[in-house]
Image (cartoon, rainbow, N blue to C red; front, side, top):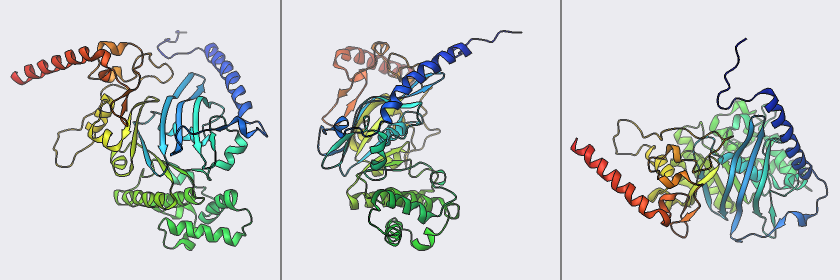
Length: 401
């Protein structure tokens, strides 16, 4: 019998069993801590670095312990979501956007998915909790109440066997139903459906999800998310699979409702058009890390990281005719075996010799604009100038040819 080729990524059954045993030991300890009952509030009570922030992500690490190895989905993410503002998290599929938001909700697929280290400080007004340390018992009161999420696909998020009204009722009853009768809860449900622009709200409340269009289902998801006036709304690809006119309506609706209940929005998308219309601040993620962050003006008018520049070049521009859209060359590194240098190096057209070293640190281009790239590190300014001269001479040669 021919032997199997042991190529890159191949694991024997013995190696898989060893990884699985080690993972069970690690996740078992984490699960015990998370499932504890009657945990004193002092263990997860914290102080906001800036009281003007609704959420502060501080060096967050969220991993998935699989039989093939540890996937570092979120690997040291730090950014803030100010009160009353919209922060857009952008990047290609698999960069860690959704896992960051699921970490805030503590909805990672357990026991494999775990918050390994770091802090997520949530501002509740009179106090602040560190979500990374908050036990399951307390999280059940926070989800849907202080933090709410509009999930990516409404058809799979809504329960197909329950009527729309019953599903919205459940949210209100669980988080804000104390002392309320069923009639009062249903009245609040109807008001929530009307608030998101559903005209025949009583009729829709008696329908099943499959009887509604995609746009209507998305509105129902928004109504459920806003039913308890949360402090922060996580919108995970809220306009996916909707046509352009419905997209515009949903974004306009989110913007108005955010101002009405003075919430903050964490908007997760790969659509730069949506980000441009909605976001006050933008966080660009690549392979589990933040490569650039700043205000919407910083990112759109002064993109600095080669990955951000590549994203900007890959979108169509009105009035500019091109034969084909730009595509960033290469592929994302293997998440189980990440390199010890800049994760974007192998795809970068501006890479320098210093890029072979350790992962670049965060550099401030202005008070609001931060980037992780050696191109802006003053220690390597000479290398950047030399690279610029080389590129200039190559362009001249190409022009002469």
